[in-house]
Length: 269
Image (cartoon, rainbow, N blue to C red; front, side, top):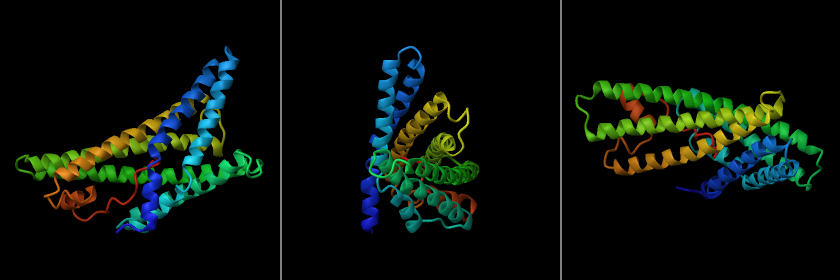
């Protein structure tokens, strides 16, 4: 079933782990620079160089990432009008972010006119922030639906069989992953606002540093929970209900609802 775009997206996604590691370097060095700037300027300068180099490296790693949003919309934009609408807005914002980030990177390294950097930064950050708002909304919708499905399963099951416990565990695992996605998206939204509308709170080194680390580490946590979900799916493969996405479990408990088609932000991973 995989076509060339699917294969390219899978290939590009393999860089997510190193991106999170370099993102950690970037924001740790930002905090170090802020902490020692007044007392040890030499160390502060080295930390600043590390931060800048890490930021540029991450932009290079993200080459082609705008295809992720395109592929998400092409493959599974959602089965209800609400989630389709949210998916289009969220992924469109993310595509703008990653696409114009290419030009920001090229202007920062001198390949394009350095004067373009500010404009590209604004457009990229605006698209990023716009998309995150709708990813956050969609995650909260799915968290709510998951909680309702869990409640339904607990009320309707006469006795907790092994399969029922695994279904509930899968729903709870999805909830944890979505909460991590919300945390990462809120953190990145703060960073985006700092570019769009500079202000003392969002642009403070501590705010940016903590936000960057929350985003990076929440992404790592999402990966771990996702792997747990895959293990549960494989373990419960004989059950046709569990072999389907979470939304199928939800629909079996409370009637038709949307398919879980929105990617987890972060996947802004």
